[in-house]
Length: 355
Image (tube, rainbow, N blue to C red):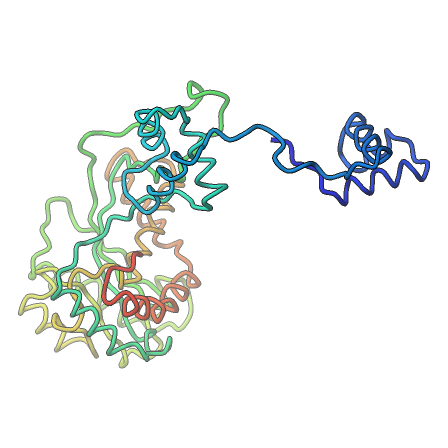
């Protein structure tokens, strides 16, 4: 659609012509055709206003009833423009999905969003979240810098990128290469720890290995967490520097997985960590309160920018490489966002806040 010239542009063009400037030059300066300027001149000489009359142009096909029907879909699920268009056609109104989209965007000033998938919270879980957040709503960023956030996550071979971001510009769909996906992709489970300034080494859990309390303590905590805690360098790469400058103030966080909350794991952490949140402190079903969840998403984005992994060995190498490339600034930003997460959770009365 051609953008309509403003009254100021039209007035300027007429004044330039009256000042003796050639019409071709005026058209070039204001960015319209010679024919358009001649039309403006005729209006000016006949005493008509230069601006267009209201109500010009193609009349909308969206009459009163369709307007009401479209407006009632706002905020409701399963209401794509195609569904709305089909609904209107069934009522005798031949309105295309393009027109519906245009009316929603331009007239009702709304945008289409996909509903976010989130864990279903019980009342008990919601209460635990409110308790956790209330106890830490006055924590400063420095207080949050004491926390070591940990988690497991899985990554798969032949991962399909986010459909919202995966776009190919082409003249036709036949020029767009397909994204292949296997039916049962191989997966790698990993474990890691983040602080505001560093990461642990990424622990790759062997294929077929279940994370039992024994494996969690003997392999993950003893062989991955402790070496990271004992680092002595204040500077260096993100995998070399200390997780915290003051190790004695560390608070270790973990979710409510059975291996984490077992008596063996809780006892080991009590005896070997300066501080940790017991199974009664960290609220269950609360991945949205853990910034490492965002880190996993960032890691997946880095993987998507690499050559697509076609086997587990290739995926493992890419994971380790992408983990090393996480910047200290990213970690600092994620930890700095904790007060906002806490306040948002309280504002939503313990409901899920998203990542």
